[in-house]
Image (tube, rainbow, N blue to C red; front, side):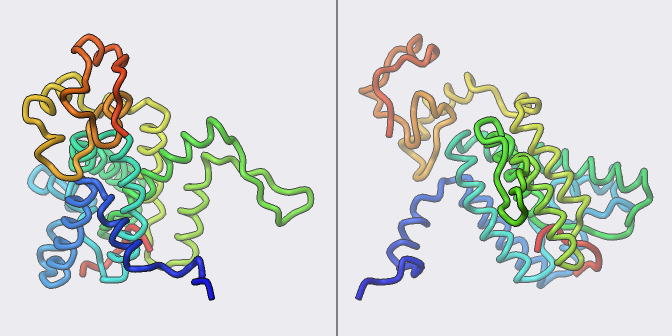
Length: 275
């Protein structure tokens, strides 16, 4: 009898894990170990969570550490299961260096600043700490949804007659609302802040946040990162592809710049971010 298609074999799991690129591995492992450590040391988690009422010049670390802490093991596991494939796709499209720069810098800082500013201005839950990597999940979902919207503006919900056409770009907002309704303690505002940055990135408005490609290509070539680092993804996907090209097959610098190379590679009480 044939094996059911829904069953996942250990070989498939190993194959998927082997395909996870470098930056995704580093970020996922950092989130896992920091969250476990934070659950063992509540004072560390209090230090790292985003608490608008206590965010000042002396505690600016909160704006960059909150995605790495989680309130419980199930909170951590569910977020990592959702984040890993999204982050893998992002890194495969943008490269390892860009992914590390963005997710340890602007993609922490900007949603955190928006959340803190809105919370302080509206006096909404200023004493409620938030933490969790789901702010990145909604950021990536929104970026993907906006890109999908350009080719597929609507998806059909066949529960009414006539069928309801829902805008593709708005699907992360619907997901954030449903999670807020059905999962107690989640932060709707935090998820919406992640969505806002994701739409900005997906639309190209925030593309300037990424480091310029020319110096990154120079660094990659100078340090031979494609050859030295397993699972490394080149910054220039249009020329190098998923795993880059062999040095003997590359074109000249002018060809690289023009994109014409002939050879291409194949604790604290409060709100949590996420379920």
